[in-house]
Amino acid sequence: MKGILIWSVKKFFSVIYVLIFINVMLSWLRISPYNSIVNIIYQLTEPILEPFRRLMDRTGLNTGMIDFSPLIAYLVLQLIETSLINILWAL
Image 1: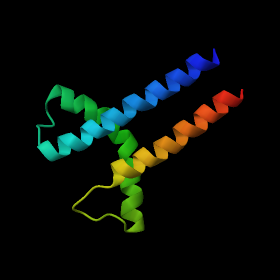
Image 2: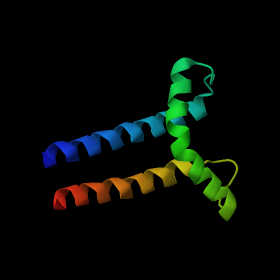
Image 3: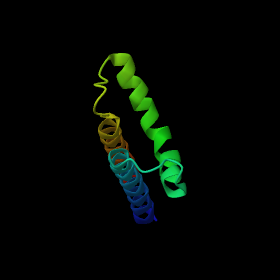
């Protein structure tokens, strides 16, 4: 049972990482945000990325040209994933 939970957590975070990566690629490609697939990806990733963008704006770390919020989100999500797996492993 523990193995299934750990596997599920890993797969869940893997999907989030891929969606964030696709979001970054879409921002470089300038595909219409009205495309239904693009819209779904934005709807799934923006709630994750937006708090990091606001944090960077408040701290003055927003460079303007390059959005580092996906990188920071990825690092924080890695920390959360590792913590969850360690907690599940200890149960």
